[in-house]
Length: 214
Image 1 (cartoon, rainbow, N blue to C red):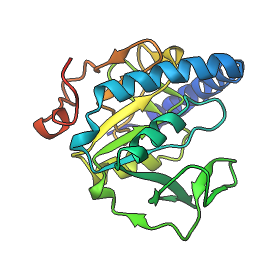
Image 2 (cartoon, rainbow, N blue to C red):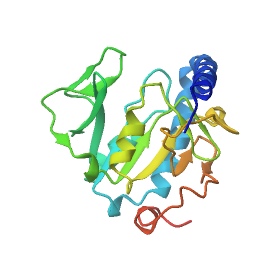
Image 3 (cartoon, rainbow, N blue to C red):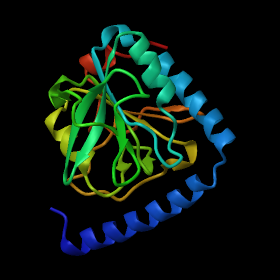
C-alpha cells in the first residue's frame, strides 16, 4: 500500500514531468511533427495485423501529440471498427466513428470527440488501445494527463493489446508509479518499437496474435 507521503512525492514528480514534456512538445514545429508522426504511423501499420482485428480504440491527436489521423483512415479503409474516447466529467466512453471529418466536436479541452449521436462501444469489445501519454518509461509505465481515465478502462479490459504512441523524447528511463497506474504492452515512437522489460506484463497468446511477426 502506498503511504500518504509516497503519494505526495509521486504527485509532485508527475507534475514536474508533465510540465517538462509539455514544454518540449510545444516547441516542435508542424513540419517536424508531421514527419515524426508519419514515421510512427508506418511502424504502427507494419506491426499490427488488422486482418485479425475487429475493433481498435484510437485517440485523436491534440496539442502536438503524435498524429493518428493516417492510422485511423487506414483502419477505416480496411473495414476495421474505430472507436474514439469521449469524456463525460469523471468518466470516459468509447464511440464508433466512420470518418474523421464529420460528427466530431471539440470538448472543453479542445480535443475532438464524437458527438452524442455516435454509438457506444463496450470496453470489452476493444481489441487494441492506441493511447497517448505525456511520458512512458522503459517498463511500460504511463504518465497521462492526471485524470486516470485509461487506468480505470484497462482494469475493465485486461485482454486488449495496449500500444502507447509518443515521440522518442517522451520515453524516460523510469517513472514513479503507484498501485493504480496501469502499464502498456508496446511503445511506438518515430524511431523505435519498445517492448517493455516488465515481467508483470508478458504478452499473452491473444495479444501476440494481432501482431505481424518480424
